[in-house]
Length: 424
Image 1 (cartoon, rainbow, N blue to C red):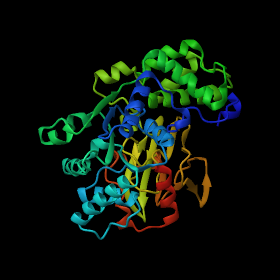
Image 2: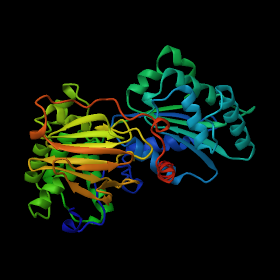
Image 3: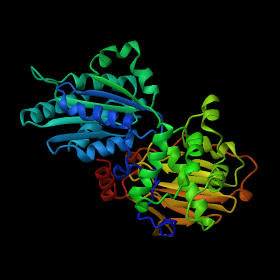
Image 4: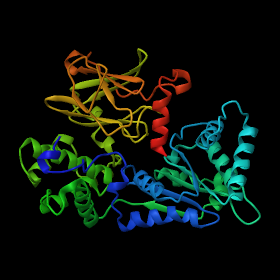
């Protein structure tokens, strides 16, 4: 990588949420204060919305890192689940084994736990990320849980975080009773142009750059023009630009290197993308819209569950729905790995995941693909094929993913526990 070249101690533009790199713009500081208010208020129920890549998850991780010890935290990240699965997920986080309980018993157990914690002077906080995926039935269960109370206080504090469509879902007439319980709502917007400049400098300082200006001043208006101030897009563009400068043996990034990075990503200006209703996230560089040069085949136990064509740009693999390839498994980190494709081929790089990526049984940080290479990621395998070896028809990513871990079997309980600890 380019760390030694730029004399950095850490990767400044990693896509995974890292509280150490949080840049608190005025808008992010306000959202964080609203999250903190859930603990202060006796009826704390906050809804935070924001576009993909706007920094919601990083804010949550920072908030959790600073939370007091007398707060019991339940964090739900898998949200495409049934009401019973939701209640089970809550109880699992609380240390119960709820999988043989009926729904009435699940509710009673949660209620008893909440009252018990209140009597001991502890607060219970439920955080649901990717909440836009919650069904109306699950939201109704959430409403019922939010109503558990003593004579003076609610005993469950709630933060819902999700993409903008969550706001429309919550405003539906059928959920009016739920919304009456919400104390605060806040929408996390993108960074302004000055904040985008300071965001880049801040992350470089945290990564060890100090006061050195690695990005030349004239690059910042271009960065904002092509990212719209969306933090994840800024990370993607700046990381690519650093790779370009490293390849050219340059100590700083000028507009020339930045423009090369934009060409590699095949981006158009952010305003043009949003005006044509394209989502302002990594999907804008979707290889399906470009000339493919290779293909990833995702399988588990010999069964193909997804395929993805690759063109020049990035393909991010992880557990949450904001990835280009989603693998819904507890063995997979939020943003587990990325595949970077250039005209010279593709390489896969670990994004500081918990369980890593493996080639021929050996854990690796990065690996340049040759035709037919197999990379193990969690319980899945990714096989790489050059496009020359494909049939003429190109397949888009099949949205079908692996079955639940109950159907697949558990390979390594310690690995699963490690991932759960990491998410908390």
